[in-house]
Length: 350
Ligand code: NAD
Ligand code: TYD
Image 1 (tube, rainbow, N blue to C red):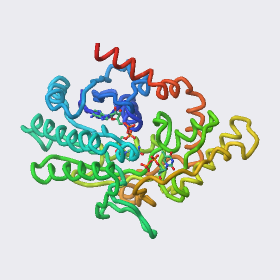
Image 2: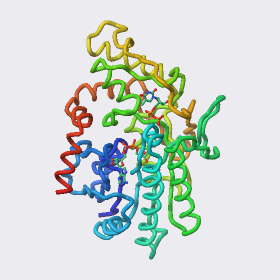
Image 3: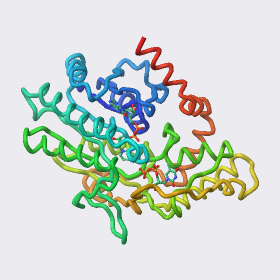
Image 4: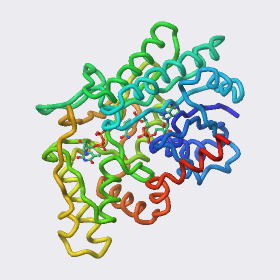
């Protein structure tokens, strides 16, 4: 095997797309998916690759340094792509400490174990940290996030991700680790846990449930199809310059209310409902505390220096996404009923 890559958080939304891409595209790499399987981790996301000979799964918490160390030894890990994280802003508002434990402590644990395991030739191994554009804070009057935009995190989630980004860069500066960081905008697509805006609305429209729009729905996000993010991670992993940061985005800004209306309109068509039926489900609710107004990425650097750009237009991506949810009722039933969590308990803890 040419490389033995540890992908953390590989059972989650983005991680599972990254694992699938790497397992299928690089049969001569060993891909080790390390995930503790929180509510957001789901091995059903990986059915396409679970029996591939270059794919391995390890149920480990990144807060457990000893267990991480054994995995590095067992698989001879040569590189890390780190995605494991608590990722939902609303949950970070109710339980910030969980975000510190995984996103900060977990990342530092992983850095320590990698540094120790690779100490004989630190310069031969890459630690790739996957982060978010939310570390830059909130845009109020135009402009875009550049790689040079000062960090200004506003939620416990973004503060924990910003902290982890700082640690990764500090390990590069202090110990000479080879690192790269990418900061991406909001992702959408298949396998997205239905607590985030787009999958939540698709699921609720389907089930005729209210669509909770925070505040006036004026907040703006820049949406990127998840497989395009996975392609970008592949590009940065293989071509990114060590020590650099790359912003990844969709050049695709939408106000929340417009996204929700678009979903209503498309789903009315697909479900054979009268036009305007699903819009009646829109319910304006209390705003999120400290709600960031606008995120918008300038992804010129990755485009010009590494040749990556989104492959899909939003219209196409959202069609694929809605169709995926309509055709994967079983997946939705499992993640909303918690059946898969009971299964993991039985399978891994008995
Ligand atoms: P997700 O919540 O869907 O998945 C996270 C995965 O990490 C899950 O499989 C979970 O089980 C695992 N995990 C959580 N805590 C763990 C721990 N302590 N030890 C081991 N595994 C653990 O998240 P996602 O949306 O796929 O995001 C993946 C990464 O990409 C995160 O680092 C996130 O900050 C970043 N990101 C996400 C977005 C987005 O729009 N979703 C955008 C930019 C960056
Ligand atoms: P979300 O999908 O949670 O991603 P993030 O907070 O990381 O951007 O939310 C996207 C936007 O949608 C954000 O502005 C909050 C808003 N939102 C709602 O209006 N209603 C909802 O039920 C959710 C989950 C989010």
